[in-house]
Image (cartoon, rainbow, N blue to C red):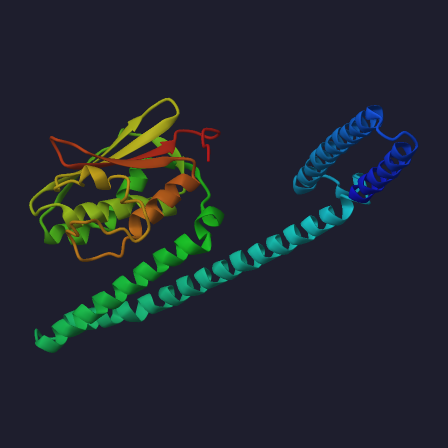
Length: 323
């Protein structure tokens, strides 16, 4: 189009020069020449504006998976083909990366699972040994290995996308969920003389995956046992609403600073106070991902009369889950 405009401009210039030679000093030739150039410039600007607008519209249609070959082949089709090819390459690369993450996460989980059996045996034999510095060292190193394996499994689940694929919510008993989660933290609680209190309405059910949700609730209970003082109490209470079931976990610990309540869900966040050296900051992130994958949500707040309260909201029935 630029060459066409330049050709017309040269033609008008030649005509102007010819007329000017025939009618020297005529002002009308200059006025007429200026009018023609102005009209030509306006037409060229309008055409370019319409062409660019059409080009952007067609490119947008191509990006939205519309048929890229239904437009003008001379201008749009080559760009559309390049865009589709680029998008296909990006999608293929993303699928390969995701599949690699999943395979790696599955491999890490399998290795960790296979290591648990010999670690449990080593721990049991260490407890059977006569009290000595060597037996105590074996027990400590076994606990460190168990901690590292658990952290590695949690991290692989966060990175590998295993949660969304393996969570299958169904109508389950909230009482069974609470009992299963509590059973995993009772030994650690007994060492600190912490007692548990459960206030679960009889027959209460909700929509969740029992195995995964028990792990999420167990993570919160484990944090409560770590941070709660000795001879304290941890309460688990459930409440039924119209669309959701709320599961509260309350401890008598020091609570969480207000400025950190929104930060504790971030990966590897340990807190400024760092009240407990154990943990790598993955548990609460995994907990939130598990609950979100089932259409629920989780939050935390401080209670003046008790301490810290974690609340998990789970869909009350089929069809209520909203991701």
